[in-house]
Amino acid sequence: MSRAYIEKLFKDFVPEIDESLMKKEIEKAKTDAALHANKETHRRIYNFIDLTSLNVTDNRTSIREFCERVNRFYESHPALDNVAGVCVYPNFIETVSETLKDDRVKKVVVSGVFPSAQSFFSVKIAEIELSAQKGADEIDVVINVGELIDGNYELVLKELQLMKQAAGNAHLKVILETGAYPQLRMIKMAAILSMAAEADFIKTSTGKINVSATPEAAYIMLTAIKEFYEATGKKVGFKPAGGISTPDDALLYYTLVKNILGEEWLTPELFRIGASRLAGKLESLIL
Image 1 (spheres, rainbow, N blue to C red):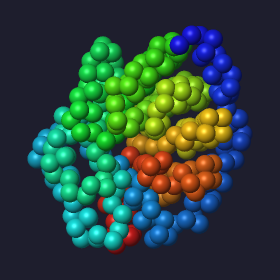
Image 2 (image 1 turned 30 degrees about the vertical axis):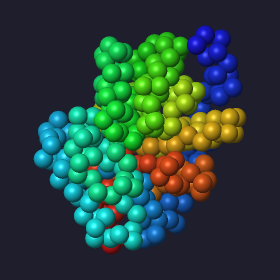
Image 3 (image 1 turned 180 degrees about the vertical axis):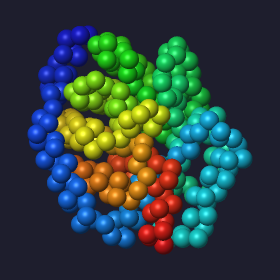
């Protein structure tokens, strides 16, 4: 992609952030979130969770037990919607496929040298291709944060397009790592490039650096999704992840999505929450 194309892209989807409006919308969402604190909304949020295990200590035994937790919910509460997906490292995709019983739950893997994305690009592509071949329904990759900060936008866009191609029929969720940027406008620039590369979702964070999901990053990404939809007619999903551990945390992101994008985005096809501890806390409220 040429520099002229990138410049037009950033002109069409202005990266500048109205911080005053952002603060007002976040405060409104915090107030509105209290209105949604009920069992029905908690059940909906449970169905938006990508239940996540991304630990250095993960092994086949622990991942089987991780999946059995999802199976037990499915068997004990067949009338309720389960979590949307289970998210693991790519070497465990076959273990997930062998263990998971609820075929409504998506098999999600992180790939492309998660969480840093710092390696030879051929290695990143090979891992994405293997993840798709082994049966991943969705693949979460990290945008090239360093090159974006350095202004190499053509390279970032080209890499994302090749990642999308490598993912094949699997959905591609691009992690922006929003806590890594020195300027808020860079979050929107990352979102614009990801959506231009036909990402199916944009995701806030890996959860592996000090700053993970924040309401500010969510607001910027959601407004970018809205602008992109209004300009192209394409709906892109949103996934906050990292540090979302309480029902109140989840309610805030739910409300931001509802206020900015509307009820039509409140489905597992367009909204996910990456979490490991949230599911258990929600279960105590919905069962």
